[in-house]
Image (cartoon, rainbow, N blue to C red; front, side):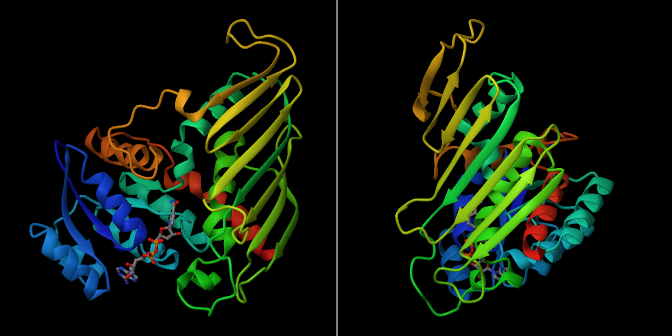
Length: 338
Ligand SMILES: NC(=O)c1ccc[n+]([C@@H]2O[C@H](COP(=O)([O-])OP(=O)(O)OC[C@H]3O[C@@H](n4cnc5c(N)ncnc54)[C@H](O)[C@@H]3O)[C@@H](O)[C@H]2O)c1
């Protein structure tokens, strides 16, 4: 395949971000957009006359105009849209959280694998240069046996009492801090350490919301005994921009990382890696991170290019496939139920 025809379903905040990125890929042709808002469709039609607009995503999926779709609808719709895309032989990049039930997540992973279609979930932090470096250091066991991890994701998304409107204010639609932000950190933990063996504690709290949680905490235990604390708060008004940060404590050192860089502490010098005893601090701009297009950082571009390239190269596997998001979905729902 030398060209991929791509459609976007759900042209809101993420749809627009993804459009701007995927449209820069030299082998991608944007052919279709679906949304239910006529204002958005009319505006897109004015500027993109060659792209076909649909007010019903089912018509887009049946149109024969796309080889792949990027699904950016409210989360509760992901399952129906992905399922129909699969039935029509269309490759799918689906925004996170993957689905709103573990059974749906598993069913979609099975379906796409059976059909041999490329599938990916938008757990974008897997493509972040800092967290990529953390994974590399863990793989090399630079800090020895990992004993404990503390991970926090904080934002001021909901910073005042507000009328319960919009899909994010209801859990059944995929709203709340756990789906919206917790899913990212649970996935990042999956990326670093695999599936947790057990979840020993969970807690939720509200600051401003009435129907969903603003704060979520979970304690997880991994094979080999590593324990982890996850803390998410989307009502922390001290953060103007979302902040994801973590501390990983090992027998021979410690890694601290956030969206701006990482620090590693070694109890003994590591000659092979050129790291001295004590702290080494590496800001984000010192990590090589080539990227053809910069929007909201480099990770969003890297994840979408991964998706398009996997289709073009007819790859059997790609980053953050549906299967990898199934365990994350299981953990999310365990937190809801306990
Ligand atoms: N990866 C990230 O960091 C990140 C960040 C924000 C949101 N998200 C995820 O992206 C998805 C979309 O979030 P958003 O912030 O763009 O939401 P949004 O509300 O801005 O956009 C959703 C769009 O879907 C459209 N829509 C609703 N019903 C539809 C239908 N039946 N057919 C077609 N379109 C329909 C809406 O009109 C709207 O334009 C969610 O799953 C969300 O969790 C991911």
